[in-house]
Length: 91
Image 1 (cartoon, one colour):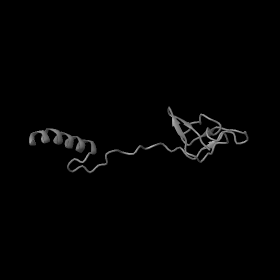
Image 2 (image 1 turned 90 degrees about the horizontal axis):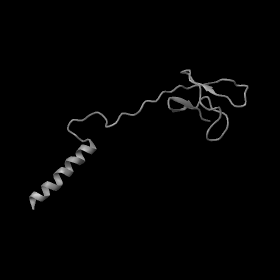
Image 3 (image 1 turned 90 degrees about the vertical axis):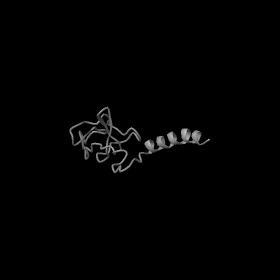
């Protein structure tokens, strides 16, 4: 009876410890937060136009000329979303 308990519970407990990352003396966090580039503020390419692309501080030009959510003007202060390394502006 005791042998059966050891065969079932000990491996399960060791697996739980490995998954939770509660090893002895572990001081660093389990995951490191991602660092995203922040090329804000942006500059409109042609402010006189009805809809304009935004050129960000790193020199990249936004893929879109209007907001994909509201279909309005892009906000030059909004952080872009990067798709395949290219910035998409938002309102």
